[in-house]
Image 1 (spheres, rainbow over the protein chains, first blue to last red):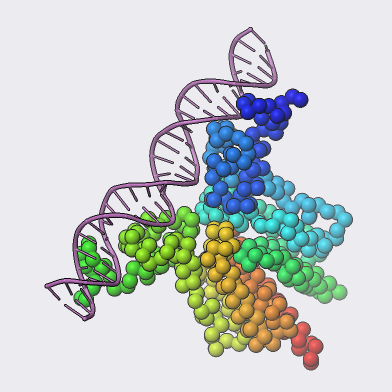
Image 2: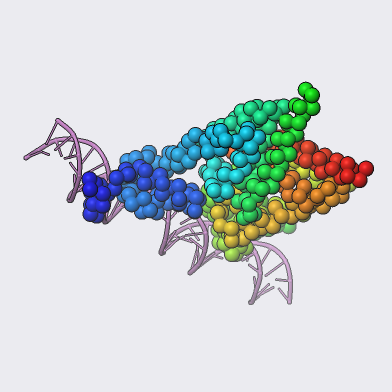
Length: 196
Length: 196
DNA sequence: CCGTAAGCACACAGGGCGGTGTACATAACA
DNA sequence: TGTTATGTACACCGCCCTGTGTGCTTACGG
C-alpha cells in the first residue's frame, strides 16, 4: 500500500484528481447535461475539493472542452482500424457503435453551450470534420465514385440518427444504416458501371 | 388612438402581453438558447412586467412549450399544401424551408431541456412524428414503394441536416437534399420496375 | 528532518435564476 | 360612479451557480 485509501485527509487515491474529475464529468454530463451539472456536484462525485478542481482547470469551460477531447481521441479507431472488415463493412460498422455510446456528446455540447466560439464547440466541429474525413478515406478505399461526397453524406446520416434518437427517444440508427447501404452501393455500382 | 402609446403606466399596446412575450421568446430563445435566457431578460424584451408574465403562464416550462407550439402549428403547411408542386417536388421542397428557419428549435429544446418528460420535449416528439407522417403521406401520393419507410428516412435526413448545420456552422441541407433525391427516385423506380 | 507540493475543509463573494408579495394605475363596462 | 380586469413598478425570497481566500494536513524527495 503506497497511497491507497488514506484517511479523510491528505492524498486520496492512486489516480490523480484530474482523472477523477474527468471521469466524473463523463458520467454526469451524459446523465444530466452540461449546464445542469454544477461544479459542486461534479467535485463531490469526483471526491475532489472544489479548490483542487480549479487548480487543475482554469474554469468550467476548459473542463468541458477537455471532457470532449478525452471522449474519442483517435476518431472512431474502434471502427476504422478494424482490418478484419472490408472497407464497405467498415463504413456500415460506423452505424453500430453509437448504440454503445448512446448519445453524441459533440452535438449535445454544441447545442447546450450555444456559443460557436466556446472551446468545446470548436473541438466538436473539428471532431465532426475528422469523422467525415475518415469516412471519405474509407469510401475511397472501398472504391466509391465520389469519396468526399459519400463521406459527408454518411456523416450527415450519423448525426441525423443521433439527433433523432435523442428527440424521439427511440433508436434511429437502423434507419440510417439502411440509407447508408443504399448510398454506398450506389456509389460503388456507379463506378463499376462506368468502367465495366 | 384607442389604446396605443399610453404613458409609463396602464395598458401599453394593442397586442396583448401574451403575444409580446411569445414573440420575444421566439427571438431570444433562438439567439441565446432557452437555458441562457432568464425570465428577467425576457420580460424586459417583451416590455412586460415579470408579474404579468406569470399571470399568463404557470411557469417557464409551460412558456417554453407554448413557444414551441406556436412555431409551426400546421406542420410544414407551407410545403405540403402547395398544390402547384408534384408530390415528388413537395418532398424535395421540405429541404428548402429550413434555410429560412435557420435552426430546428425542436431538437434544440429537446437537447437543452434534457428531460424527456418536459412538456416541450413531449411536444417536440409529437411534432417530429407529425413531420414524418406528412412525409409518408406525400411519399404514398408520389407512388413510393414503401411510404412509411421513405417518410422516416426523409425525416432523418432533415434532422441530420439541422444538427450538422448547427455543429459545423455550415449549411448541410443541400447534402441532405441530394440524398433525398436518390432515396425518392429509388423508391419510385422500384415500384415502376415491379409493375411495369 | 525539513521544505515543498498536493490535497483537504470551510466559508464566502457576487450574481443570476425562477417565482412572489404588495401597492398602485388605467381602461372598459355596468 | 363604482367594480373588475389588466396591467404596472419595485422589492424581495431562497436557491444554485462559478469562482476564491484562508488556513490546515499529509506525503514524498532531497
